[in-house]
Amino acid sequence: MSHLGSTDMPLRVAIVGSGPSAFYAADALMHSGTTVAVAMFDRLPTPYGLVRAGVAPDHPKIKSVIKVFDRIAAAPGYSFWGNVRIGTDLTVNELRRFFDVVVFAYGAEKDRALHIPGEDLPGSCTATEFVGWYNGHPDYRDRTFDLTAETAVVIGQGNVALDVCRILAKPVDELAHTDIAAHALEALASSRIRYIHLIGRRGPAQTKFTAAELKELLTIPDCRVVIDPEYMQLDSISEQELALPENAHARANMEILRKIGDSHPSTAQKQIHIHFLKSPVALLGTTRLEGVRLEKNRLEGEPMKLRAVGRGIYQDIPCGLLFRSVGYRGTEMPQVPFDHSRGVIPNRDGRVVDNGTPVVGFYTCGWIKRGPQGVIGTNKPDAAETVKCIVEDLPRLSPCEARDDELLHTLLRERGVRVVSFDDWRRIDAAEMERGRAAGKPREKFTRIEEMLAVLEKA
Ligand code: NAP
Image (cartoon, rainbow, N blue to C red; front, top):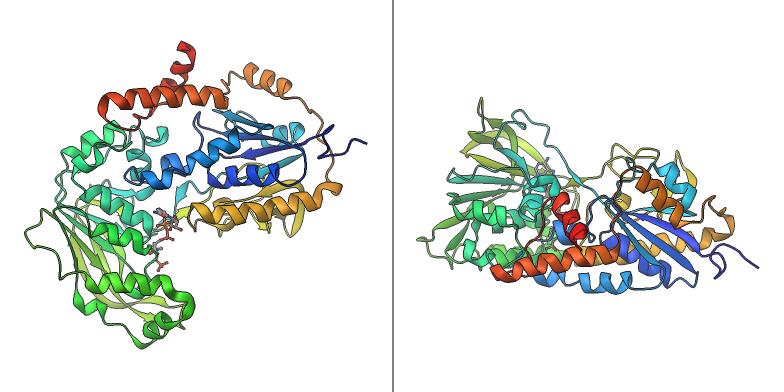
């Protein structure tokens, strides 16, 4: 007998987003013992989310996970619907008419704000914009960064902050053969930035970045990393925290931080100054950024819950460019419940809930489910948890009205939307790699949607 998830009536799943969590959800669905048809939607003509637009260009190994995603995309029952913006080209309620289940996996695109005076001054930027810009994301293609000042400040001590520091500090020759966007490479080639200040509001035992990324900072040619030894003295609670078995990550970072300072020549062209226990309280300048005012902090609270508290002692750092790298933030999708305080879709184990009640057929995974933390691999168990809920709920799901992809194609065509399939993406991919060959790069990305669609028109 036909029932949802049988070969006669495959479970039709729309996944909104095509980053790591979306692909891991597709894979888990395909291995769930249920017959599925997975349609993956992305507002861009290109898949892979932050693996394409977030992972730094000098981290090609991390990007090799794309091979895994390509194998998932080649499985029967998978389809890519690129260049379709859910919420605009097609509302969520319309999408629901065509699919039994919708999984929201669209990540956390925006950045958290500092909420301090001067935050919007020209010269004050978000890491999100800078990362998108050097990675060729169409949204940030026309963003410009004034790299004429000698000093840049990066607020935050997570891996994104380290990516920003590294891209600013690396000699361009080291970036020239990566897939960095051509416009960024050109701008960085004439950058005058020499001093980069990396500011943490808590101490060296509370850094969020990972040891591998920190070590990498020390390998940048002609770049000295400096830490004021005063800040390497830990308070007793940080010492306790550091000794906790679950805090191996912080111990690994501390070990590296303690060695910094002895081994780098002071004649280096560029310097990265790592600051601890300082919070930005104001960005200075009238018509554009001229500096940042930091307040020195002490730590208060219990181990693993230490908070930075201002001491009323201030320090100004003059700078012409500042990046806020204090974490990403999810955005609301019309017709979907949203938790504004956390910037996530409210859910229980991946089941979307509205005021505590599950919304039938709606699920979520990845950063928009749990908030913007974890590395690519974290998304695998996270997506598996969501898919487990979908499978458990199968008997309670009702089939969607329109079980027909052609009808959906027609609707989108009528709305002037050029849907980009996975085969279309492969053509764009091949064209990018071809462009890259000439420049000795793995690819030269198209950074405008029109350029990507033009490749398909030619084909
Ligand atoms: P993150 O790891 O959450 O780091 C955010 C940083 O901003 C923390 O140091 C945090 O300090 C600080 N911060 C937050 N609010 C602040 C404020 N108001 N004032 C001053 N500082 C503030 O975020 P992320 O760097 O954006 O990274 C997001 C996720 O992507 C992470 O899981 C990261 O590991 C991952 N990622 C991985 C890689 C890689 O594997 N190579 C690369 C990039 C990103 P507190 O600790 O005090 O809150």
